[in-house]
Length: 88
Length: 113
Image (cartoon, each protein chain N blue to C red):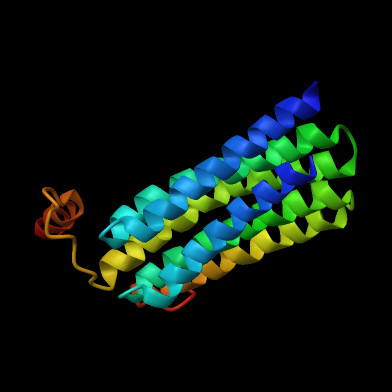
């Protein structure tokens, strides 16, 4: 079971590093925005898995808050890309 | 029994996440990357959180995992839609192998009306 969990965490770490590669390399700003969005969702899954392994349920609270903040941040970045102000 | 199903769902979800992130790295274009990564990672994270809820049994953790999964399932496509519109409006060029651009035709038709 320990080894299975390690494989799960390694898979999610590989996802995070691929997103970080795209954030660093991405030729345009929307590329980076997409990668930040995906990184946020992957981290939500990471928090869920962390809560399962440690048996502490506040990690799931962190995951909920992270999902909310990631969504709001992505919407703000998309508005910024579109070149409009926030109250339109 | 239910925790075995939960672990299978977690493994499936992480596999989806990996495929989505490979698409994020390998595809040539913002729109292709958005298309590949957002859908795969949304479904993968949803499966992962449902798997966490099943593997943990009942209790506050399972409830929070299910709420979080549904929230991700609702908000992530919305964010992807907003990013796609923002990318198009900020003038990112399409990949040279793209064959059809129906959004440009739609905008032209809406302007001529």
